Length: 235
Image 1 (tube, rainbow, N blue to C red):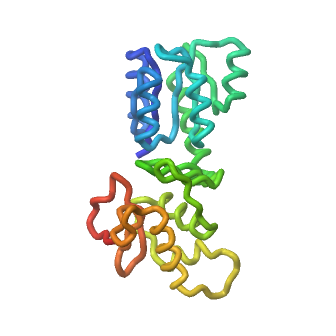
Image 2 (image 1 turned 120 degrees about the vertical axis):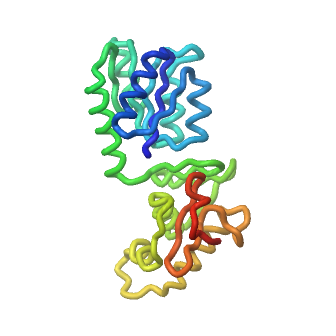
């Protein structure tokens, strides 16, 4: 389920927005100040942020800059600041939309749906969970606080796995989608080698992987925190 982070210190408004989004089958998380928002965006998968600018512990524009410097997540500003200079500043800092209060929940839902469709159409660009931060747009891959160097083939494999996390991708499908350079024949052993190299770089214990799981007789899956305990998965 898509998770939207609502950063708004007005509790009644925050609750109202979250209930409206829930009706649209989105998951939601609520933050009432910047400290809570920073904790949530570091530990949870967020597909979109609704951001107020006037927050009790700081300016939402600072949080907007932090998000855009490190993640490729759409941000919709929702604020009472309606001066043209404020709107221009927010958009120039990377906001994907700017809505002023008072506002229509119907319009808010429509604009959120537009942003999420845009992200889906462009494919996954940033994935963050636990110690991992993967930016496929900037080709930046981090485990803990350490950058990880990945080959182009390893990047393609990783992106396919995390885009389809929780699902099993067959070996044949992975070969077809990774080696798209027109080669008439690719030995499936090349996939096994790429999987091993990726595990060596990302897993704490490559011989007993927590993330890149083998589904014997079928292929591979990326097991994140929600699906790691699913049956039928093996190292």
